[in-house]
Length: 108
Image (cartoon, rainbow, N blue to C red; front, side):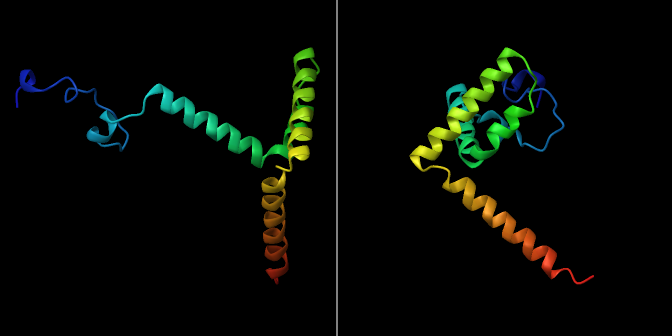
C-alpha cells in the first residue's frame, strides 16, 4: 500500500507499547474517563477511610495542611456515623488474619 491510500488512523505514529492499533482507536471519552476516576476515588476513600487522618497528620504544618486534617477527620466521622467503615474494617481484619496465618505457618 502506498502512503496516499492509508487513512489518517492507519498512519498513526509508531508506538512501542503492546496495544494493537484497532484497540488504540477505540478509546474512551473524557467524560467516561472522568466518571471512572471519580468512582475510583470514591472506592479508595471508602476502603482507606480510617487511614486518611493518619495520612493527613504526616503532611506539613501549613494552614492548608491543617485544613486537610480537618477535612479528613470530618470524612471519617461522617463515614462512621453512616456506618460505612465496614469495608475498611473487614479488609483490615482479613489482612491481619492472613498475616497471622503466614507467621504461624512458618516453622523455621
